[in-house]
Image (tube, rainbow, N blue to C red; front, top):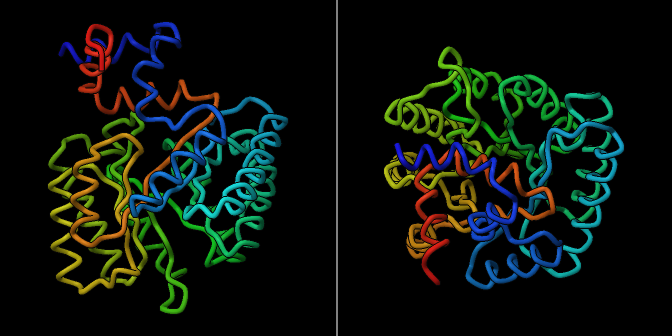
Length: 303
């Protein structure tokens, strides 16, 4: 209860205070910070996915600026030889303002990534965005099947059905590509599973559906029981190593991450950066109130 109380009130504290918590989970405010961290992770045998923070914008001018930042990011990432791809939040490009403008802006980014034979992942946001983001994915996938993927969230009651419906896009030659995560947004119980065991059960059910249908999966979790469950499914369906990867957030469960790599599995780390880090940080805190303990310790103990 103490952790939840701290997590609830911390977003109202000054940003400098929140940065005490955030700096462990965000590569920095500048692109150069993301490049530095990405190189370090590459050297440790990990791939990355880069994300420019800042969603739910208020104008298409902001959307245009975000697009340009991604175009610059792609050029710089390729110039530096980083082994990584790109995560895109559609609300950063005006999804809830003008969905056609959002599509055009995101298409420009995918075109740029495709010119380097690289890949963009469409992040899944909260429930008002779900249908819009699946529609956006279908449109972009029709033109760039090798260069675009989607995030799906296991805690949403609709996800298994959504995955079944999207199997029509999958093919042996060009498998569809999903990141399967639990889900972080606060949703009503009518549309989202709430209990830990329930969410985990549906996560593994979704993962099994994808493996059975030879879909490429980014297994995005820090939950040891889910990782062990994924190991069992990989063995059961004899999934080749080029058809899946594990994915984790920067700064979270590094020991568990290393154990997955040591077991011979591929790992991709989500590397966020940018000046608009506050919303991301407070969302992480609400998702995992135990992090509040680290913030309190940081205030009173050096190191």
